[in-house]
Length: 399
Length: 145
Image (tube, rainbow over all chains, first blue to last red; front, side, top):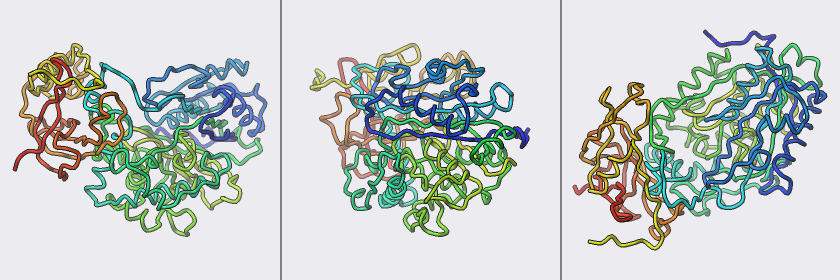
């Protein structure tokens, strides 16, 4: 079973809006979300009353034990529908790795099933007060008892272990991560909504940053922010009548880790094997081959993930991505380079959890990228770790 | 010998039905691993159903292992995200494949200091940190060659 949806029933993105990305907003996350969703619906040329589906993933990726409050630290699709005063036919949320990919899947399947005709997909990210990952726990039960008593807690040592395994195995220097972060910040500095707008980073500034979990420094992690993005999706047969060129969801795939591990433990071989499985599934379901993709967008919540996505997507041989980035191979201003961070990524925008990758695919393929417009017809937006996240293929054509 | 109290306590593991024998053994400075009674797989951490065979009643027993293994990766932590580790910064965390537990990897502190010479494949053996009365946490030491 291919899982493919007929072309005339394919889901398409037909509008979007993005809030300013701020370190700490002076409005609540709920207020920002309401405004952003109204803007997205208007952008799609629709009245709010036409929207009958709401999907999202709400996970707040902080480890500091913060209280979760709907409308303040997260925004569920149900809260959104209530506040907008509409009576939707379909409300659903996704939980787990690759949050944005899971949300897209919900929207796509709801549209194909006829459960909704116009779906708003939003992602709202909050930077809670206090320490983001620092946790004052004095005792620890459940799964974290297997790692926290050793001091293994928070994503910093997590990505430190995964990436040091790569760096030691293939001889990757710290300069490789510098190349990734500098590229993301260069592109992010050109995005008016980005937290890093007008603030590129130099290689020297990167290399001067103190390490937190060797060889990882703070700049290898996207910065926590308050920010909201919203997209409107509908079916191909309806998308033709709307003002902007539709961007079609050609296929999506979500990875489920195969190997049972300790909490936060993501060994390199697990990540790569799961990533190759994911990508094989993605090409099958999308009906594309790698050479069709001219706008790959690597997930970069942690800079090393860009190297791993380059390799599992087949854009370079295993163990070679660090050389590719060092040689300018992902410089989006260079002809012939692989523009995996042309949308600024999370490192160049702020912690928007897969939104920058999806947004870049939408903006470029709908020809709405302005001065940044590239020639591209098919994109892939990656989210998370390759073995536990997911990816979506977007195209300008519904086939 | 009395355990020296750290100025700020580290998080204390709270044993449950799936972990109690592990922590009781650790307090005696012994490393044991949960083994599924249905399929015989060593499983860390123990969960229901068994990740090896899917059985809903793994009835884990706990078997002693040598505690010897080889380093697959490591990171030097320079910032504490939990209480009780500040005074130890920086310290090394190692990712260890255990020699007599195929596929089982443990993560622990390396007790040889922050500048211990490490390489992929370095041999280590388990050690224990006494962090409170009758509470010890598995860690690792470089094996003498």
